[in-house]
Length: 433
Image (cartoon, rainbow, N blue to C red; front, side, top):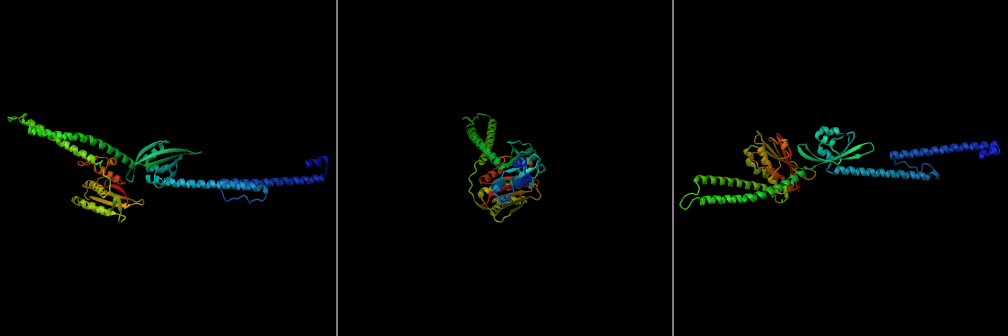
């Protein structure tokens, strides 16, 4: 407006020239100032993008006009930095939490890459390097196909052999959708011990019902048979010496009743064995020295071991180990397992049985009974602890089932770790005292 005034109303070319110079200077200063602000904004946004917390704006330029906005810039950067630190802490917390739980967790993205695998998953699967789904396919095709096909919120139960151990894995899956990807989170847990405990509890309930009903029937049968045998022997003749029935008929009846009595007595004995599986006493747990325990087993079974020329040895890797257990129950478990091993190695030219013990970092004591017998077929591995299941002609099928119950009531466990020809291992786990 001033330039227009001096150019039109009061023309003065000198003043007009000066005003034009001032206008050009103002425009240049405005452009320079705007460029400086643009550079500061670019730097600010680059700082936010890279989460750089070292950049400060409060002292970059002097002047009241920009001091407040620079302070706001610094406040925003500090807020972003606080959010970044909080996210890092949350990630560290969740990572540590996932590593400490005993449930295996892996996450797989849509490309088949394993983005997460905690230590429990690697331990259960027996693999240290799990980067892609291909590693899992090479390890266990059945498991990998299950993990591929399992749907979100679905639960499956699969059997898996790892290092000779049978595991029952409960597998569950869920899906998380991100902006450009989908991640399947799969959790799996070995629930074999829980299933074994439930199975044994079911067997005990069934056995209690069966023994109650069978004993109610077997007792009166035995009593009635004894009464009939007495009547036949005392009242089989009339006063004049004549017999009620021909002698051969009485002999047949007597023989038949005796056979029934024998079978009834056998049934009562069998039912008594049933009952023994449900009448496990409460353990009297004390400190039991493993070396002393092994020596007792060797003395108790010495004659049987010598008769079969068995090379019997004991190993305690950590020197003196003491477990918290009922000594009588523990001896019974080892006697049962050792006798089974003696039966298993009888066909071997050089039969070998080993008892070994060691302790892990979690204060668990493991006792292994190893023999070089013929082994147990894989299809029978999950049946060896079923009550009254046996592969021997004269076996009762009670020893292993009873041994597992004796281990369970003491807070331990008994499992078949491996069974192939020439190498069968039963593992007993107990707590160290």
